[in-house]
Each structure stands twice: as structure tokens, then as C-alpha cells.
Image 1 (cartoon, helix red, strand yellow):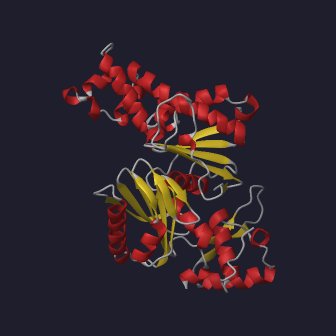
Image 2 (tube, one colour):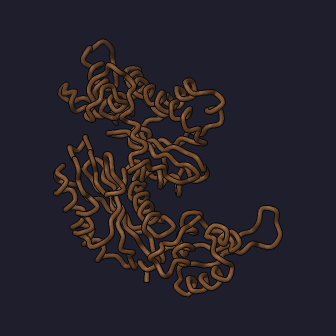
Length: 401
């Protein structure tokens, strides 16, 4: 059910746009059920939205043949809305329409890991970017950011990889841009994009797991993101997999983060290369024998090329992820798991091993029919998901008048 914003005098328009945005095209009779608006209200409101060039009618042929059914859908490109995603010291800034189509995209490098600098560089470039657009922009901003994000208060509670703590990012960005701003963990944002527009679009119950410099999950029940009490549901990287393991940046011992991420792959590869016990493609990658230059990408590519040492390193990391996935399957019984982030996107060995271990260690009845796919929106997914999260929470028709 789509509930109108009570403060919005145009509640019926808001409800219809939200229904078509979240669920896609549908006939009037289904729209009546989804929005719980009367047929008369649907009819009159649709006429107004068509005059605004926001909604159009389309004929869709039924699978059984016969007369094409008339459905309603949003008009592509009618308005733009902006979102950004921070990953590896680069903001990806995108402009999208209400259907999730990418209208414009740009990259904004960040010159410092200090939050003030990173935010200032984003807002400066965003202000310039908006002036160059040839489309009407809805004044709302969505942010996909690293770390544990309190989505009720708009605060990054902690992003250990960046050294950020208690950054009131929504308030800072909103003041600089003059727009309402909504922040969400970048992996949960990417999961929402995959759920709506990508690999998870055909599933109602799915889990997105992003693996890169960190690990986080987005849990989707009946296509809705499970946020938890303040937005922290899905901190998969900080479950304990080795009780007596080393200390994680979060303060706990033996977290999955220490065993299955890009940094874990790099550290394990360096450890094995130092022994000098065997030949490896990675020996040719490291210049001047400086193992600190070795990157997870190098190990992943070597593993997919059949290098035994690299395969062993990747399998070690992927096995830990597979165990965590098995626990998720047993706990939540999803239809599908979508693996995203830099490691799954560039390493089929990692994905195959994690999938195999998940199936071995989960209950057969729960994992037998489960689909494991990789993300198809890696570059723009965080920005797209963040703005959809913002629209889900705060969109009102008054914003586009």
C-alpha cells in the first residue's frame, strides 16, 4: 500500500507516482488496489498527470492473446533527480529520471579523506553540474556512503576505513545545497538499485552482499529494504567468523571483514609470496619486489587465469564469505543472493567458491533453488539506490510543481 504524505495536499498524485515508480507500469484496476484510491480519483488524477506529461498510457499485449491491455506508466526523462555514491576516494554523481534511467553521470575525485573536504568537493561540483543540465531537477539529494549510517538522523556513526565518526552528513550537505538530503549505507543503496532495476528485479525476497574494501548486505523482504531500528541491518562484515582472530577496526575480534575483503586478499597474497616457495603470475606483477604494491585486482585476475597461489588466496577469502552466506540463507530464506562490489565484479573464482560453500553449508531445502547472481549496476548503483531510498521516504508531488 502506498500511503500519501499527510502534509501533501496533492496526496493522490503522490500516491500514483510512487506506485508507478516502485512497481512499474500497471492497468488502472491494479493501480486502484495498490494505492487504495477510488476509481473516480484515479481517473481524474491520471488526467491531470498526463497533462503534466508525467504519466502516459501504453498498450501491452496479454500473454494469452486478444486485445492489448491499456496500462499506465511514468514518462521517461520528464524530470531529473540527483544522487551520489562515495567509493575509493571518488564520488559518482548521477542524474536519473523517476524510472531509474541514467540521464547524466560524472566522477568527482576526493583529494582528502577528511569528511569536510570530501563533502565540500561533492557539493561544489554538484552546484556546477546542476547549472549545466538541460532538464528540470527535483530538489532532493540521495547519498550512498561508507560505514554504519543512522538513517533516522542522517549521521554516519562510523566509517572505520575512512576514519569518520559521527558525521552529520545529511545536515551538512542540505545546508550547502539548499536541498533535502538523505543518506544510506552505499551497499544497501546498491542493493536497492539491484532490487528495483538490476539483477534482483525479478525477486521479491533477496539479499544483496557488497564486497570491496568492506562488506555489507542489503536485506529485501517483499522488495522492501529491511532497515532495522535505525538503518544498521546488514552489517555482515562485522559478524564473528573466528572468535580468537585478530582485532578488527570495529574493535571486535575475528570479523568477516578481516578474512573476505580486498585488503584480506592482499594481505594473504603478500604473506604467501614472501615465502618464495612457488612460482606465481603475481611475481611478475610486483615491481621492485615491493609487495605493498600488490592489489586485490592483481590477485583476482591471476586466480581467474589459473594461477595456483592466487586461486588458493581467493578461495580462502571466498570460503569465509560462503559460510556467512549460508548463515544468511538459513536465517532469512531468500530467493536470491546478488553479489556486488569490486571483488565479485572482477573475480569469477571468488563468486564460484562462495556459492559452492554456501550451498554446502546451508540447509539443502533452503539453498536448492536459490539463485546467486552478480550485480549489473556496479558503477552507478549506489547513487541510483540512494536517490530511490530518498524518494521512497520523502517524495511529494509538491516537489515537481
